[in-house]
Image (tube, rainbow, N blue to C red; front, side, top):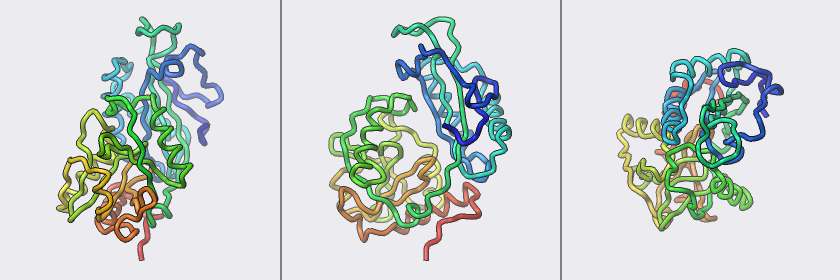
Length: 290
């Protein structure tokens, strides 16, 4: 579990070994809940407000009433890091479910949402960020409401496992010949100096880093086009990359065993990585490109 002993449970802070819920818990039995993963650099949150805002959009979408305001919940998340005296690079995982009740499909009445969050260390993967990663293409078999950061992740898990079993970092998800996103990240293609990515519809998760990538592109005068690219487009792409809270801006240098362009991270990806490091105030352990 967590590398840090103190866990946020509801609005209390407990030792992780004391965290318990009844076995009839709707997140466990129905996947009836949502989650977030928030990146931390040197003990400080990155894009915290964006993650909290998305969490509240997700709980609203599945009709869970959060017992705390955004402001109160944000304070609790800051206190979680303080209680653990966290100073390292890492992440916070947080989860909200409809609560504990006798197992029945309709919403139970008079239940309190189960909320918990915990912190763990996670260093930047400078090798992958510097040299790039491989990916494969697999079918997108997820539901139609991917904008909700739901606990129902079995299709994503199967896609990620397929990637790992084939020596790849990530799986690009394909639906009707176009790439929607990845198993746990957003996907982008660069062609003729322009960035293409699937539109921010219900079909994809609206990544917090994705929103930052769009802003970086605007600041750098790089066209950011919300237009789906196809499987065939990858064959002639100048660059392909992905983004997520834990992967940051990650170059993809091969897809299905075929090299992307010259098989090296491209100049636009590098510019976005530099913008990310500046935005996240990363001073040490930065990407070094000779």
